Length: 304
Length: 304
Image (cartoon, rainbow over all chains, first blue to last red; front, top):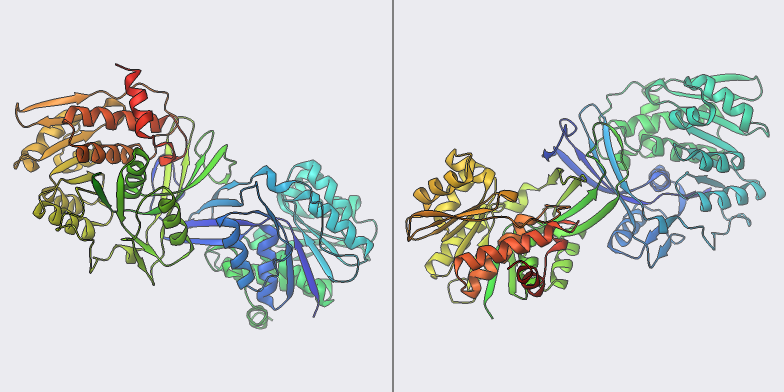
């Protein structure tokens, strides 16, 4: 059983479904409300656990009620949280998110800067404890250490390159063996609005040592660069009735890391990850809709 | 030492301060964020405890992490939470609130309807355990029982009449000996937009048995009906630099109940409650800004 380490964000998300986003001051009654332990790397880790993977999380939380709660919840999901850094003088991160019927979102995240200090210790990566490392861009100091250690250990070093300050992206992108960038992040780094052009530009910058480079573009599907042929491959998004796209990218990245850990071919990995993300989008509540491996297989079997 | 029972809402509020309210979909970084055990009656109870009062809370919560947390927090504030009803199959209430620099708010509250079922037991009120009862409009079944029991026990039965369905207001208003209505609730019941007219109309309906009737109107101050002279009295709001008016009404009502329990004259009570609410408005974070009795006295001494 391959072991995966996810590195990055850990937050408590409170997600409200509303008929429409608040147009101004007032009181708005939600149709649904979900509280869930989330954050990019944490949602990916929980998604990997759902798929049946053995997964650990390296994240940073306060010694407070929110921290206790989100760690307990992820542990219940099967994520090993023993590497989570608990900080005495920091507040755990939390976000409030309003989602309308069309899936449009207002997000207000609270991150205590003290959570993001550079770690003075890290999980053992060099000695073969993990088979794949997956990091996000939310705790750059830890992500840089983990990606570098993964490269030294010659194991896949995956970066979920979502929007972040340009200096953070430019710090982390060269350290990864597998870059899966969101469309806005890819545009931020390359200046290319079209995701196909962005993947080519990213590959030109960061695909030198046979690194894998992809861009996910929501309902336009995902694009990746084929080093062997010098072409861009495209996996269309599955056509589902989306009620909530929140955390779809995190579920995609978790499933991607899972596929890499299994040693699958890249087109199989991208198809699997797209299916996992599509299934998630059919359920309200962020990562709560992340599927099991059997659900993904059933979804894919029905679409061959 | 008089004992006060507060009856009604108990929620976990997450309050974000933003430069401006979100104008549409997107991610918005707050300047401050506070999580706090709140809800009208609970905030009033915590304010009474800050003032030095002996106060109990009768509210309804789920048997979940949010419930544990908010009860622990109010207990730490000195509120007796032994009467809080914990329900196995209900989720505790929570709200997310965005506040801009001008104090304008977007509020999205989540209330599980299961929390609001009519209670099948109530705290002992009839036998002189409490000296004053203060209820809000958020748990009408419990408020009706408590107000009726208070009237039988011939102790003050205060109603914080904030906006609620008209049937709830019309259920509770006749049961109270002291009505302190918000401006919108008073308008909803009487049709009168002007708070001075609204207080006259409310007194005509509900002030028969020498009941006390007041309307609070934010920075326009508060108005009450003097049964002896048939006139409306006015307490102007104190002129302070308000940064957050959230829970100002709850702090007012807590201080009002405290003054009633002390047996003060009505004008002294209204002045004290106005001062407590004004001090609260100078601090961000909802009821977190509720003052001690010494702070209110110092504030008033500086303004004589």
